[in-house]
Length: 134
Image 1 (cartoon, helix red, strand yellow):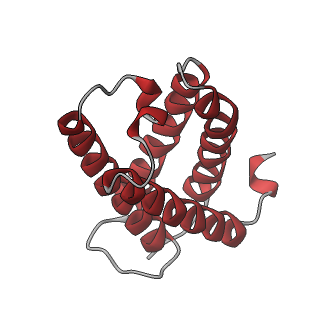
Image 2 (image 1 turned 90 degrees about the horizontal axis):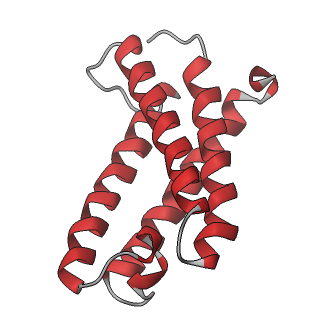
């Protein structure tokens, strides 16, 4: 069923989604958006927020680069198998994140981010299953 999704549409969807997520996390890092609405409402200090948001931005940029490589927009010095394994790690990451969002203390995170992270997991899975050689 998942392979009925278009590879290109999945790539565009993930690249768009990740770009928005990076912007969102930058807005949190710059305190335009309150940090209490992320990380399950569990962050207590600005110091914690800065650490978590910096790591989050780094991971999202990494995901963007890996997807761009799989779609042949970039040429990383990694094998197709390595890129595919990394993509499956992202599938698991988003699936677990979906579960975490469902149990968040923040209603917005539950209602908005749970379906978005589930969709991301599905799109990453579609990209990962593409039989694609460099």
